[in-house]
Amino acid sequence: MNQTLHQNIPQISFSKPYLFAEEEAAAAAAIASGWIVGGPKLAELEQLFAQAVGVSYAVGVSSWTTGAFLVLHAWGIGSGDEVIVPSYSFIATANVVRHVGATPVFCDIDLATHNLDVNHVASLITPRTRAIIPVDQLGMPCDIDAINELAARHNLHVLQDAACAIGSQSQNRPVGKDAEVAVFSLHARKLVTCGEGGMVVTNDEQLAHKLRLLRHQGMDLNDFQRHQADRPLVESYPVIGYNTRLTDIQAGVAVVQMGRLSEILRLRRQVAEHYQQRLSHCSQLRLPQEPKNCLGNWQSYMVALSSDAGITPLELMTALHSQGIPTRRGVMAAHLEPCYQEVSIAIIPPLPKTEYAIAHNFQLPIHPTLSEQQIDYVCDRFLLLLN
Ligand SMILES: Cc1ncc(COP(=O)(O)O)c(C=O)c1O
Image (tube, rainbow, N blue to C red):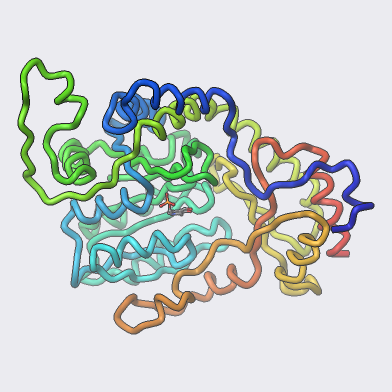
């Protein structure tokens, strides 16, 4: 690391959860209460989430991955079915399709938003297609209205992958409100976190009921209901389920985090605006833009480096790393990974925009406690390498 240039700059984290003593106390309180799982905190978190998104039901699960799997399973999607997903996403988006035995069909993206290209999705629909999984990539809202319209025309389910998008807005509405089902992640890199966790939101009462059964071995009573009953209750198991619950320790932490959401959104926006202002004049970069009438939550800050920059993203990232600046490649492309190379695992049409994005994009540090001084340091070093 170049010590001279890095003097007085506190060490820069690429990402950092915004957790304080209140979260610690909430975890301790759940432990002290004896309700570490199956207790009342999860219900409180679910209510807060449903309210924040503006839907009737929220079902807490152990991760986005397990939540999305349960939804596809509850819809009866399986072997012989196709589900259209962007390759340009974290690999979990495609993996859940394989988990239920169906075939992911990879679609391309729009390079302005890095969200799926609805016209390309339309061209991939076959009689075997059962669902579309649009992603709000890095928290930037996808065009859910256009996707819903296409899905309605072909009688397809829509599972919105809002893993990164809590607090984002599309057409003045919270992301997640307008999909048949949306699933959020509570992983450590998300705005609201408890380490790991997920939240499925929907207005579909029957689906929410089924998900509650499926997340707990198909059991029709939860522990808290049994505890509160005035007589011994015997549960039954109408469906074969899984164990994908969120614990009450996690839920306690996430309840406190939900109370911080507006502050987290404000602080992240400040960081993003500072980057935009410092980097906007640089012709070798394409900066992230919020889609029209949308507000992103700035979960990440991804830039595209032009082909004529005279330096590759990897060279730039390596040089920044040596100066104490952590970066990450842009979003991955699932179709390029070894596990998706085998024929019949997935349908892979040409994906030129995805492959362009893979070659040109990378991410700069962003989190609520990144100081102006740190952002300036990142931008100074970064711009020097480009000139
Ligand atoms: C777009 C997207 N989908 C799904 C996931 C998976 O979420 P989880 O780790 O909660 O399973 C992530 C996690 O980073 C993600 O970014």
